[in-house]
Structure formats: structure tokens, C-alpha cells
Image (cartoon, rainbow, N blue to C red; front, side):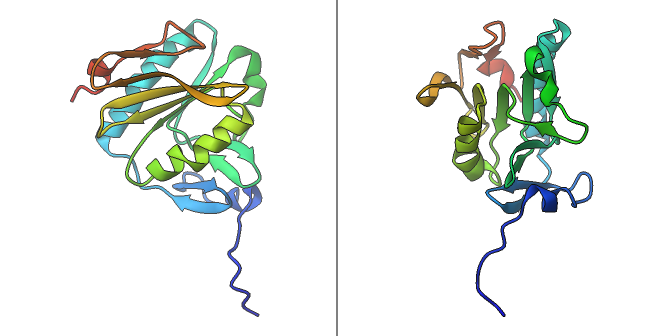
Amino acid sequence: MVTGKKVKYTYKDYAKLPEGAPYQLIGGDLVKSPSPVPYHQGLAGRFHLLFAELEKKGKGKVFFSPIDVYLGETETYQPDLIFICSDRLHIIGDKKIEGPPDIVVEILSPSNAYYDLRHKKDVYEHTGVKEYWVVDPPEKRVEVYVNSANGFTISARADEKGTVASVLFPEIVVSLEELFRE
């Protein structure tokens, strides 16, 4: 019997995908993402270098995509970069990150911008991500959101020039001229 009801997937379904499958579980939907373009990966690499300095100082661990971040039965994402503070390393499981990272960096691309700016942002906010960085390559813009009792509020924004900094780790300062160099 056909009911016309859309199938919602859970983490149990997602976990059956082959390792490295280019999917995220967003709102119970399996959303396929194409491989990032080289410019996108260059941006991710620059962020990784910055956050790796925190890891060297014992302040936590940095991971870059693809890594599964489980935020609920219908929400498992592969953010471009995450940072987990040293007092929360227990959320690093054998197969996935089991809870909200402290910092999430998402680099927008045509295939993911809608989800990153809407659904995923809301889930990050409600599950307790402390900082959410949104990097918009075409606009050469970086926005840093900080989670508070009122939800995400923007703490820093720069377009093309200038710097933005982390609230959790003020030593993390991103120069937009350096970040968006070709």
C-alpha cells in the first residue's frame, strides 16, 4: 500500500552506509554532498592550521571533514571543521563524535548553503555548540556566532578585509585577506 508518506532515516540507517559515503543525515533526510572544490579545501586547511595550534597547547582536539558528528537520531553531520575542548574529549567515540563540538566551522558551497544557514545552524544552536563559524567564499565573508541563553548571536563579522576572532579562544584571529588569498 502506497501512503505517500516520506521516509525519514535515522542514525541506524545512516550507519549502514559504506565508510566515506558522501552523505549527511539532516532532518531525517540523507543529503548527498559532492566533493569540495580545491579552493574550499584550501580554506579548510587554513582553519585547520589555526586550530591545530590550540591542540598543540593541550586545549582540545581539532578534526576536519569527513567526520560524523551525531546530534540526534535524525541529525548526523560532517562539518568542515570542529574543535572539542579538552574537558569534553569524552564525546569522541570510536565511530563518531557523540554530541555537539564546542566550535563548528562550515564553509558554504552551492550544495550546502541552505542547510548550513538554516536547519543545521538551528540544530547546532539547540544542541549546545558554543561557537558557529560561517565562511562564505563568494562573498569573502566570515561570521562568528556565539551561543548564549538567547541562542546564537553574532559576535564578529567581516567582509573581504579585517579580522574576526574566537570568543572561546581569543588567540584564534582570522585575517580575511590571508584566508581568502588565491
